[in-house]
Length: 393
Image 1: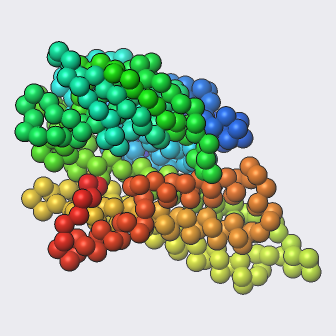
Image 2 (image 1 turned 60 degrees about the vertical axis):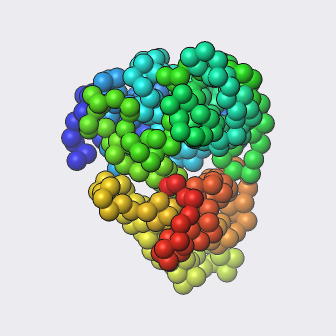
Image 3 (image 1 turned 180 degrees about the horizontal axis):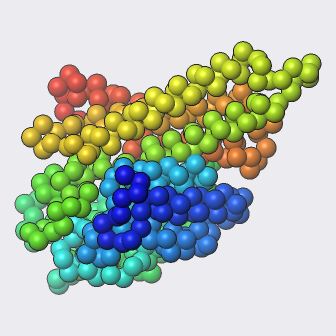
């Protein structure tokens, strides 16, 4: 598979992974500046764009290297192995650039052809007022990852359109220049993601730029016209479960790097009594147990992708199962990170040490609403007993 040509560009999967490695290594070199600035640099963002990785999930009519879900996961994991904040944005920029793929064709063309980066906030906390053929959008949203480097932003709103039968969950897409960015991202982990808050004040959005999430997720799973790209990997999949494919791969990439760091540092470590630490049953046991835990997480992530690839609308995998698999894989990664930090001790505690940084970042990934373990297992348990939940993916 790795030598197979991608659908629309003369790039192999190996070449895309090499681009991902370049992004990750650059972000790793600049990690301390990103921590201080609370965002990755323009250098990293420009490389995400120059390598076409930001456009790799666009339908092939727009000229990007349309890739499958499994390759997408590999790319996210590769970048995250070097820097988790950069992995976060390497996941979200191309993912959010897929949003126009579900718009009416006029809106899809306008945004996709602009080649600008898109960010979004799903939380439907905004308000919409009808204004001619469009709507005025207002509200305040938090956690707009990568917004400082974006050209477009989608913001969640519960609203009614002319043909609505009631309120529905939508995402109007507007230019980032039309909203106010509050540079307030100052956190324990994922500092380089630049996930600032934004305010929209009666921003006009034409109807063709309003993504009807309820309809896409529940009814259609494709754009609202017939001549759409039948090969597009996100169509006819459970929208939110497919959309959330990256979080567990970010954590997995970081956990893989931490295991490497633990092994290499343990091989060099000498106890005060002169005993090589790699000869200690303590560290041997830790490396063994955590390697198995990593393999368990890897298998869960692979199973998640298989469920998406083989999704059957006549016998669908429930959203609660996707959530439980995703959250459990991430929980395994947090346990790997915590135990490695505690086993290495104070030598890994220095601010900016790769182990300290990645441990904080993996814990931050685990706090995302799509990764909360207690919520996930509770909802899956309800589902197994036949009770309904409000889980969407």
